[in-house]
Amino acid sequence: MGWIGETVDSIKSIQIRQLLTQAVSLGMIVTSALIIWKALMCITGSESPVVVVLSGSMEPGFKRGDILFLHMSKDPIRAGEIVVFNVDGREIPIVHRVIKVHERQDTGEVDVLTKGDNNYGDDRLLYAQGQLWLQRHHIMGRAVGFLPYVGWVTIIMTEKPIIKYILIGALGLLVITSKD
Image (cartoon, rainbow, N blue to C red):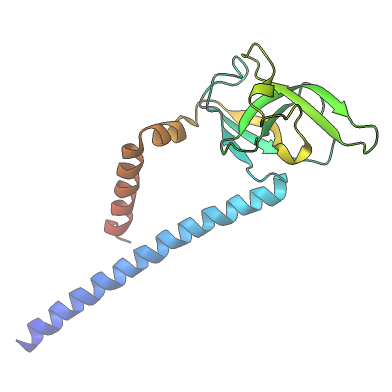
């Protein structure tokens, strides 16, 4: 009975060891992703270096599901540039084109007015109540590149949360049950 007991204990310790190894591996993957994200934030100067286009307001240039890469430099924003901005009171950023630039004579600061390429009017109805222009602190970044359709994964997981939970569960199960 002693030999069998030792064997069972040996198997249990291997399983626990393997489980801990898999948990550490998963933690390293998550940590690496966060480090890469923070590095991209530092390199691009944008609080969100990658965004997904969520609506058709920028068609035909950008379609719903396209991923945009952002960069925020010290250069002044000019008419015609595509920017991603946050509006006070809204948590989802908006991707639209700058149609008008207003430079304040007293401070030299630049305010901008935006419009979606597929929209009829400017974005003043989207801005906070009483706000007529976007200031620099509203702008998250300028679009410098894109990947078409890749963002659909994010849109589907946001609109159908059950798919997100199934995917996370399947990936977690795969990590835990995989052998080295």
